[in-house]
Length: 196
Picture 1 (cartoon, rainbow, N blue to C red):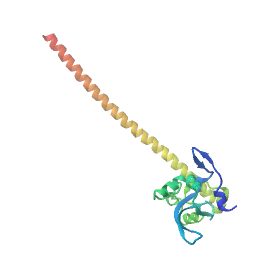
Picture 2: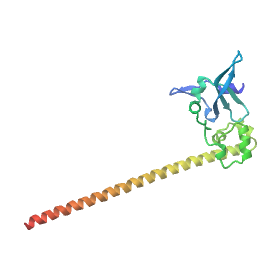
Picture 3: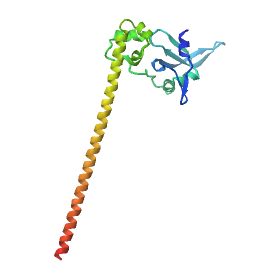
Picture 4: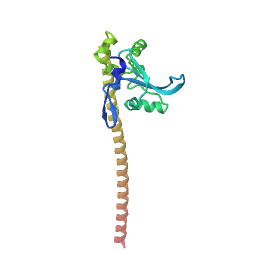
């Protein structure tokens, strides 16, 4: 089976969006290209490039409506003229790799830390003798990032609660001052009535 057969599998629908197993590990780019017609003229078309991680197989073809639905975030970015981001943490942002390792991984169509963490056994074999170790490091890095995000979320929630508590304490102090002021005014009125 060629690379396009791997990519063209039929998916199930969920909430009207096509779902395919393993799509999150693909790096997909839409781009405009001119297609030569039978009469020798050219027609502007939308092409899709699908990089399959772990090999040098790259699918390049005219984009179909199914591609646009299947890879909706990338298609939307392309239509809006925005950069089509890599799904996950780019290799350039992972300090565990040197530039040579990044270049080698890019030749294997691996562009993100998540692609390494989710790599199949076949992909790990293609990556060479340190493939499994690199996968373990990638998983550890992502777990740490996830844990750090949770810690940051709790810290932000804690800060918000402290701000709310300070605001409540301020309102309560203002309420006490108002009550004391009313109490003094009432006592003063009572004292004046007794004196009269």
